[in-house]
Image (cartoon, rainbow, N blue to C red; front, top):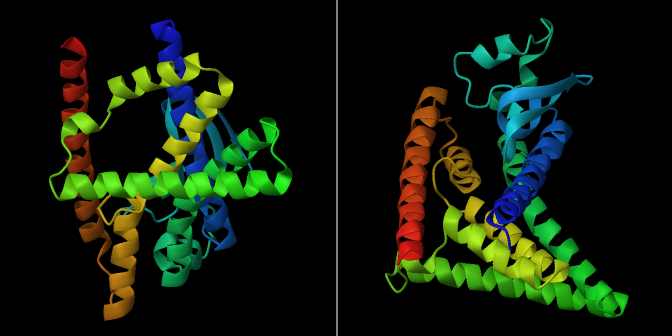
Length: 263
């Protein structure tokens, strides 16, 4: 398969999976009464935007995911609120900072759960297409989704205890190669791979690590236990450190990918 097509397929797959994840946060935030500033497909420079009743729906230039920006989230100084020209009479209760801890947990969980739901729908559809009965497709697809989850947890456990090396994990280069391999076997094979990556995205985001949903869930649960909020500045610093660590890990994986490819 042409390398350019493999890259396009990889970017398209990851963008869809991330947008679905962010859509989960968006729906849960709206249900919780949080004012959502922007829901974007893509990152980087703005290509198109439309302001709905409240939220700005945007398409951005870089096809590498998307985001759901809530009022009060990662915005201790209120700069984002000013940029989106919020209504002057908007009650502070609609800020992400001020919703109840229970609603925060639901918002945070909604993203990973949407990835799991997408994986299930894909697997059910694949089994249906292969001629399984409806109920059999639901059961078989669900079992395979559980199997994917177990394999991912096992891989993470092996990494933590030192039984797995970086060579067992794929970064951007490795991902492109795997997309090409699965796509060569047809659409259904590619969809199975998409479902696996969707499950992986959901599980990884639940890890108790700063900058991930799981890290924020852990902080929220801790705040519920001690009945005191972590300051927004401290939360931003913690998330910044976590994000930096993730970037370093991603770069290490990417470099390892390239070295493995060259050898």
